[in-house]
Image 1: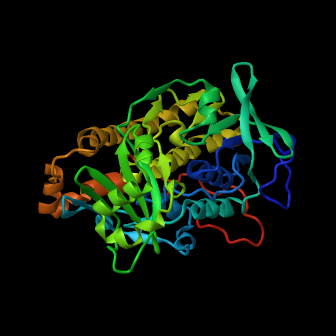
Image 2 (image 1 turned 180 degrees about the vertical axis):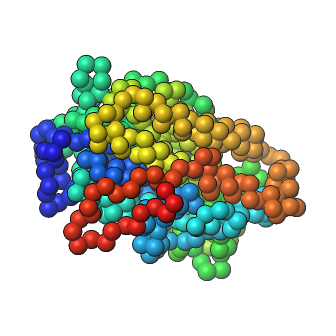
Image 3 (image 1 turned 120 degrees about the horizontal axis):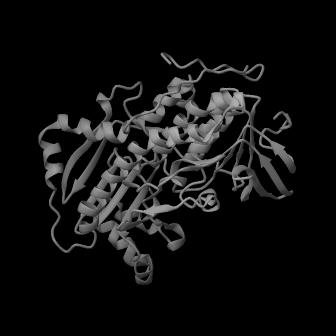
Length: 434
């Protein structure tokens, strides 16, 4: 277990064959958080990321209160909040000209009663930099998993393609954390249940003026839905479209598309020409699905690899991180002691299945009963009954804030550091009360 070399470049894993106690495929939020938690607990962990860097735009950039609470429990919150970010205390929507607050995070029983917005690459860099402080953490960028290694019926590692040549990483536990287009999911042969989605989303960025609204807005006007996320000097915009019509919309031309955006958000009319061509607009194909079984001997999938979430509520990242915390809590000890079994993996899925299923059920309800019927409808938009109730009784806004901000069954860091941090580096404080 000790032939993963200690090298000056902490992203480097030499070509050939290496061993670790856990190999994580995917350097997204779930994979990076799991890598940090396991390394902090004294587990030898290798994270493999197929891209050469984290710089991919139009990723989920919302860090909800549940994730901020995990960062606090790791003793890293003060450092994290030094990163440039926006803090959102409430979520508002405009429906047919009627504005209402949907969620108010200011009453949550957490350290941070807001949602933080920052580029995902900054978040991933932060997690990597903290994980690198532990001597058992290794990360390899530009390393694409191409196959599984087996010992009898058990998964025993992965085959990896790197620029320098093939690499094999052997480990008692392989974790698929490589997102909704998961290679690990496909290689594992675990069956997928497709739950359907009536929509896709065009993502784009448009500059922001000081005179613009200061909080994120969902705008629903005349069969059009536009989500606008405040990103400092620009808006990250998501234009929701019916499933499968992206080619039809593109065929109408970029000018027609710009006119639709300006119709929903007239205050953007003076800068809509920033969308010069379709190169400035990215398509997210919305998919909602889940594995019936997340694991097989020696392997488990978490995050979007186990359950692709709808963008409704922006909770996908935070649900994935909750999976990572639950997995680390269960397997860190058995991995160190060499006693990991399929029962440990079953316990993780058992704990996280209920939050996953209930969250997807709520997303599907909103998709099928509000978003789907609204898209392209010629009828004038009127606020549905739940929106009118939120406007009339402000205390009701605490319910969606709790569901979106904390989720169902939020996880807490249970392990304490069992290895000394790299000499000369600041030591994170232990989680209070855990």
